Amino acid sequence: MEPVEGSHEHSDYIGAKIGMWLFLFTEVLLFGGLFLCYAVYRHRYAQDFHSAAHELNAVLGCVNTLVLLTSSLTMALAISALQKNRPGLSRFYLWATIGCAVIFLGIKYVEWGAKIHHGIYPGSEHLMANFNPGERLFFGLYFSMTGLHGLHVIIGGIVLLCVERIVAKLPRGEDPGESGTVTIIENAGLYWHLVDIIWVYLFPLYYLLT
Amino acid sequence: MKDVMETTAEKPHASPYGTYILVWLCLMGLTGLTVAVSGVHLGNWNAAGAVAIASTKAAVVIWYFMHLRYDKSIFRWMVLVMIITLGIILGLTFIDSTVRGPF
Image 1: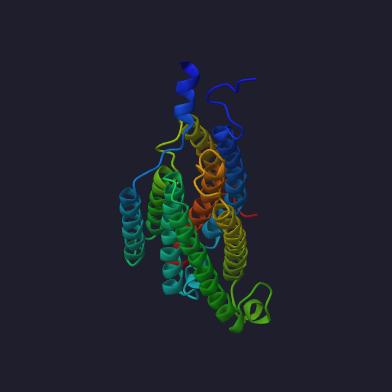
Image 2: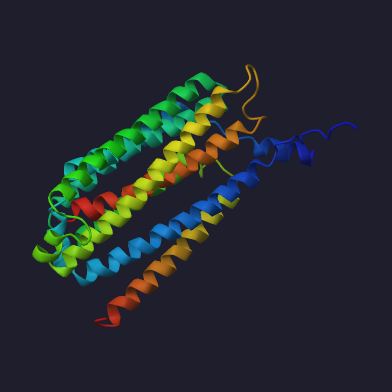
């Protein structure tokens, strides 16, 4: 039987993307609930939230913002490169994105390490003895929200590693659009950009409102 | 004929690298702006300003990096419905918690 023109095995490009967006919406609701918590408690303990924010290192937070925004750029470039059938360039940009993820997590490790070293972590003796209830809530929310976000960065990094392997194994001369690889890298990119967007909100709300 | 048209519409759109560099510079600039604004004491307006700038950055990321600008209109509608839903959930719950008095 003659194959119908325009129909091929991996043709449901739009369907795959809709599925990815629907998943992203559930992620938005997950973080949305936490942002709601933040807003309610910030409104209730405005003064405590202001004083607690002084404890955070705004310079490290800012550097991390620049790192994640840059990783979003390299992610977009990796997708563009594969769409233009340049797998080698795409892999270079994917590694750059993964590198940014590692730098981000390294800075986060230093930040969390310093806080924990100074006795600031949920339920610590120092926190319970020397801080107001609102300040304790601030740090509880800080650790849970940046922690959940950091988990997403780790998962995103692993996903990007898998995508890099898939692109590396593309047979020579094969159109990445036809084999569905472009769909895979685009959906991984959507996830990565969402992780970036969440940090875009976390950064000013925790580090800058002092 | 119709089939052929649908197939071309489903082809992913490749954007020029230059556009992405400009978008990235714009995001860097907005980050600088949000840091600068936080240095000025505006009371409650500091939080509003921070959220407004962050939302601008998020919109830029969604529009260019997440390809909403180039994708089919169904994606724009989906994102719009999601933002409105989130706005209703967050907005109404927040207002409720502020007018209800102490826990």
